[in-house]
Length: 406
Ligand SMILES: Cc1cc2nc3c(=O)[nH]c(=O)nc-3n(C[C@H](O)[C@H](O)[C@H](O)COP(=O)(O)OP(=O)(O)OC[C@H]3O[C@@H](n4cnc5c(N)ncnc54)[C@H](O)[C@@H]3O)c2cc1C
Image 1 (spheres, protein in one colour):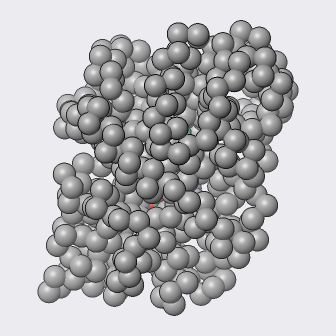
Image 2: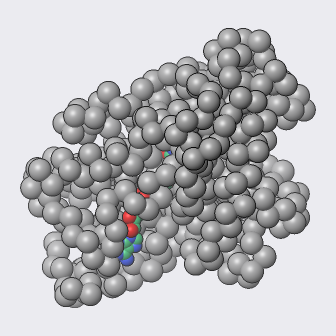
C-alpha cells in the first residue's frame, strides 16, 4: 500500500482483519500529511458537495481576494482550469442532488467502522460526541444557509436551528453579535486527529503490519497486474496494491491505469495552546470557512480553501487571518503561542472520493480524493477496500466513486 495517512492506515487495519500481510509505504511518518492538522470533525452531516449552485458567480471574488475563505492562486489557474471547470459543472442542481445522495450513502453509519479499530487501539475515549454548531454573524448568511440545511434534513441529518441566545447558552464564548445558527447534536470529533493516526498505526504494527519510510516512485506491471512498487530502496513486491497517497495519488493512479482529475484544496490552521476561551464542541463559521475545534492540544482554528496546487509555498497570511476571524466569533480569544500549519486536501472536482479497482489492472485498488471528509470516511473506506480485495460485495454500492467515472 502507498500512503499512511488516516485513509491508508484504516485500509491497512481493515485488510489485516481479513488476514492479509500488509506493508504501508510512506515517505513521511504516519499521519504527517493532510491527516496531521485537520479540523478533527467526523462531519457525518456533510452530505452536500463543496461546489453548490451559485458558486460560478463567486469565481471573480475567489481570484481577487487571496485571503478569502475560497481563493484561487492566479499562477496556478492554467493548470487548475480543467479541474475547475469540472468543479463548477458539479454545482448544477441535478448534479448536486446525485452527489448528495452518494455522499449520504457513504457517510451513513461510517463511524461504526471506526469503532472496532479505535477500541482495539485503546483510543475509544479520544472520540467524543458533543455535536457541533454552524454559527452565523450575518443574518443574511443565516437565511441563505436554510436551503442547504433543508437538503441535509432531507438526507436524514439531525439539525436544529437555534437563536443567538440559545447558542450562547451552549457556548458562552460566542460573540453577542451572533445572528443565530444550526446545532447538529449527532456529530462527533477526535480530541487529537494526529495522535489518532499514530495510535492506529501503532496497533497496525503490533498486529504484524509493516510501515516503511520510503517514497513510491512507480509501479512494475507484468501481464496486466501490479507486481511491485518501485522505490529508491528497490522494488517492493506485492500481490495487490492500494494507492492511498492522498493529494499525491494522481501519478500512481495513472500508472495503475486510472487517470483521474485529482487536485488539492489547500487548508490552513492555527492551534492555540492557551486560547483564553472554552468551547464545549466544535463551531463552524460558513462566512469564514473556518472550523474552531477544542482539542486536547488546544483550540484549533482551521479550514478555508486555497486552490494553488502542491508546489507553491504556503501563504501564511491565510493562517494569520484566522486569528482576526476567530476574535470576531469569540471576543475573548487570545492567539498567543499559536502554531500554524498548511495541508493538502486530496480533492476531486465532484466532492466524491475515488474508491474502487483500477479499470485496467484488477489487483490495483484506489482509495483517495476524500477532500474535506478524509478523517470522517477513513474507516469506511478501509472497510470498503477490504471488501474489494476479498471479492466480497461492498457494504455500499461503489458505482458513484468508481475511478473511471470521468
Ligand atoms: C485545514 C483542514 C481541515 C480539515 N478538516 C477535516 C475535518 O474536520 N474532517 C474531515 O473528515 N476531514 C478534514 N480535512 C480533510 C482530511 O484531513 C483529509 O481528507 C485526509 O487527511 C486525507 O487523508 P489521506 O490519508 O487520504 O491523505 P494524507 O493524510 O495526506 O496521507 C497521504 C500520505 O501519502 C504519503 N505519500 C504521498 N505520495 C507518496 C509517495 N509517492 N510515496 C510514499 N508516500 C507517499 C504522504 O506522505 C502522506 O503521508 C481537513 C483538511 C484540512 C487541510
